[in-house]
Length: 104
Image (cartoon, rainbow, N blue to C red; front, side, top):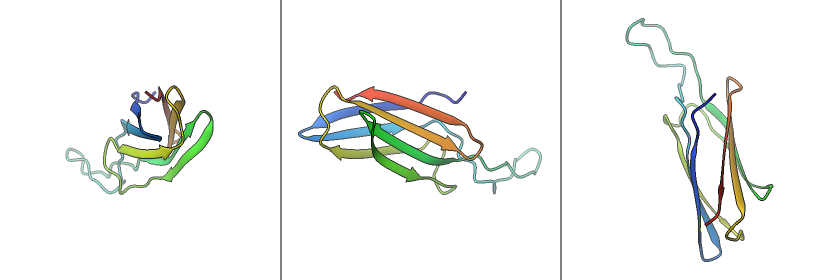
């Protein structure tokens, strides 16, 4: 199981500000292991989705150009305090992770 993501969502006027730290190695498949000289297999997040109260607000395609432990921040107009934000990702090996927060 992947390490938990850290998520925070706050309101500023009528805009929700969502910040997510995703724990993931984000290996490109091009880096060599210093000890063995062998290529480290590719392992990276491919799809990120976010919903607020079940309605999709973000769908992002990630790739090998994203750094280890990606940080994602986005703003959404319209939600209210107390609404539930859920962020999910799926990587190229089929691993999944999810985090949720209540907008404060």
